[in-house]
Length: 151
Figure 1 (cartoon, helix red, strand yellow):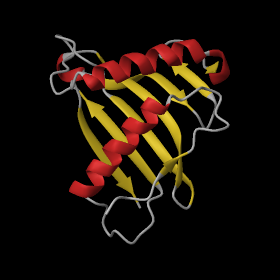
Figure 2 (cartoon, helix red, strand yellow):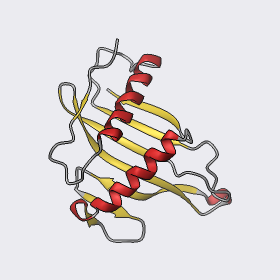
Figure 3 (cartoon, one colour):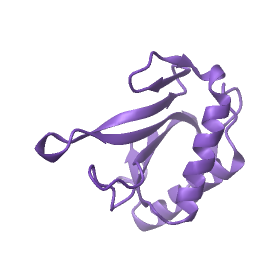
């Protein structure tokens, strides 16, 4: 039985393509069938999807990990809380994943490492390019996907 779920993209400062919401819904349904939240009767307050390239390496490169969090608004309706892109800083024992790009829908800000925050309403074209690239990487199966339930 599928998880009743609706992703609301109205009233957001950025245009969220239907292809992205469809991808998220499909991955959530796949994960729900394979590993449902425990206990299943508790409401799911948030769902985080983590997209990882298993070959990403601080020296050799690869595709940056991406995290997308959905927060429950009401009933079965969820909204995107953030889309974050991570990259390695440092190397060797000091290496760590840090946020490179962070589209924060709740705060309506885009944060890029080393730059001051920018209002989301000013980064529409950048977000469009980012999502287009992300969708292309996803379609080319570069990511392992993990779904994290918060209930």
